[in-house]
Image 1 (spheres, one colour):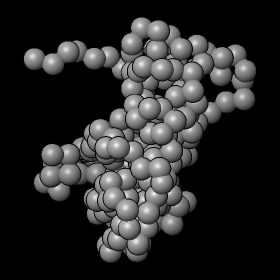
Image 2 (cartoon, one colour):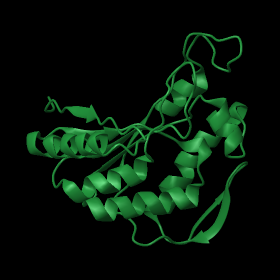
Image 3 (cartoon, one colour):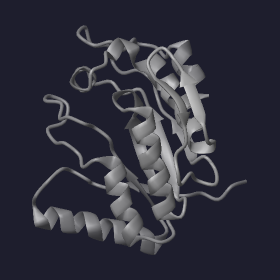
Length: 199
């Protein structure tokens, strides 16, 4: 049986408040001291009615955490893939892997906030298929040179990113459904495509 491992979501709320930012730094250092993995949240925008805050950008947040830790894993929980570009994200992930000594755990998922999709030029109705293409293209970009991918939403040819990690970061795929909202796109049950993506 494997060893039980703990992680903590760091309160990486976007803020210019120096006291709050110092608490974030202290939390990260304490995690490293006690061997507790550092997790950060990803939301591009605030969502009035659900949460009234925004979060610091997760890859940059973990780069900072990598600089002030030495042994704990650094994780996204979860990174909303469909609002990103696969080549740019792969370069960010590869850089974070290099800076952290490959301590990254990449938690990913399709997201749910329609405004984040609209703001980044995509549609929430495409999120599942986009997420699948992102996972496939990231795997290619992070594991081989001269990567080529032709999909419905993302295409690139003969792309080599350096430095690449020696192995693909541990990948955790999240998804599900929430209480049905007449204005939302989620269904009251777990779709087969979502279960397949998670598996």
